[in-house]
Amino acid sequence: REESLKRAIESIYPQVDRIIAVLNYYEETPEWIKSMTKINPILMQNEYMDSGKFLHASIYNAVYYGIDDDLIYPVGYCDYLEDGVNRYNGLVSLHGKKYLAPVSHFKKWAGNYRCLGSVSSDTKVNVVGSGCCAFNTERLKVHIADFKKGGMADIWLSKIATEQGIPIMVLRHRSDYLQYTNIQTPTIWGTTHDYTEHTRILRSFIK
Image (cartoon, rainbow, N blue to C red):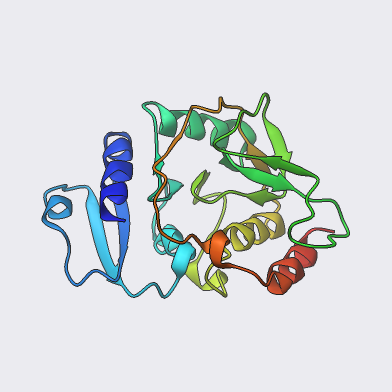
């Protein structure tokens, strides 16, 4: 996935002050990353899975962006999300789901707002897409220890925000706003078959 990671980082690099790059299963930091002075590379063995993007969220007082390695972020992306963070004083994203209580199953949502699809207006949701999200760490307190199990970063982050009274919003966007690199490797969602734990956690905070 290194080529996709490189494209994702290159797209976001001019827009941020620092990048925390969690490099799973790398024996050493690639030279191209070493040459990019804003990047803080961290070599890991996938201990946190998708939650790793929030590894250092608790040590910065700033607008913090959750970034995935299979998306290309357009010019102005960070400004757009930061504007949403300030406008709603909350957690914003380009991807999310809306569930109705009581939640019957993880895959039984009332609304699905995709980052690769069009969303015509800003929409309040209760589960965020963490790979294209932003929040102010002085408002939303996120610690890696709050992500109790890997592969469920969206749910954990949504639970944290809900319990802190932080609104979760999907911002309006066109279907072509983000680009997907279409990595030909298994994804978390493609390899998950048992959603018992996902459903249990959703029920714990969606009332």
